[in-house]
Image 1 (cartoon, one colour):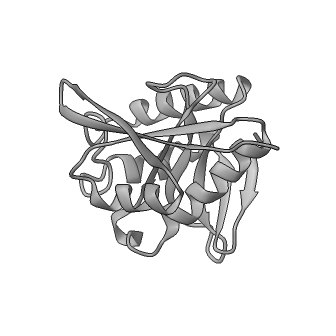
Image 2: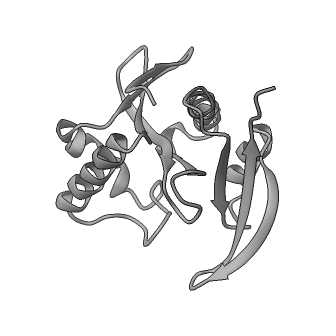
Image 3: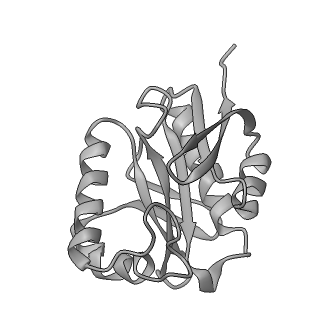
Length: 168
């Protein structure tokens, strides 16, 4: 996957260590970072997260910082990782600052990441979404993702959705 993707409003750039402080603003915000165990409290946690994503890039998967093209403001993250479904069929994720939600930025970024996945030869991408996350479910539906099954984990029900791209 490429290290840089551009859309009409966004520049998607793979994370670097110098992005830590700006990303931590997003990850420490309880209104924005509601995934996993919730907001991060230490900058070192954010630095570790970036380091893990940089290592994953060496394996062919990418996670991007979403920057507004007109201001260079970091407004979120989007990418794919070897999550619950593995590296061959990676999982997509996205997150946008609370102050910039509701503008279609997550969907725009996710569409660009999916297109990059398919260009890189990845034929199926998954998303795991909690049933109460209506906004994320809407984005997944617009991306053509279809519910495959549901499983419960320690936090409750988790929906598994997927989209496939087949070359003919």
